[in-house]
Image (cartoon, rainbow, N blue to C red; front, side, top):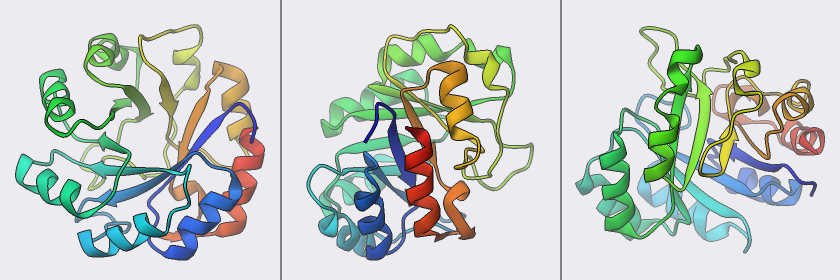
Length: 212
């Protein structure tokens, strides 16, 4: 594996998890959001997490989840990180970190420069940032929409925590994105699928190779 750490999000089968591990990706993402075609129940997510080889970080994506759901999630599924992908405030991020003792990655949607303003404050609360394309108005999903934003907005910027680039990445463009903005971590979901929620294992391997 090269210097760029890759997260493959939205895994739904044991074969997906094993393909991600074989590709050399660093993170496997599981989605817990009812409107997503990649949504998992807790019992099936537990089975996927248990089959993940050692060294593959297991990340749970949740959207504005309350403590009752997070309590059940943490108790059922062996995880390495929580990804908060809703409208969570820095205070809520800090609260979740303190309550569960797991690293927290906070997703921030970006459409223009104004959306970058809160990133530094959020980086004080979160362990990592995930900088994603802001979903279109009225979209059902907060991420996984296959949209990109203008990556040039991130050129030369630094934050207090590690960050990950997401949004519209594919095997065809990820190398350009990494080269342009120096991203050390990238995230992909729909860009390695043959249909919504159906991972293409050849595309996964090609993406990780292209990311470098």
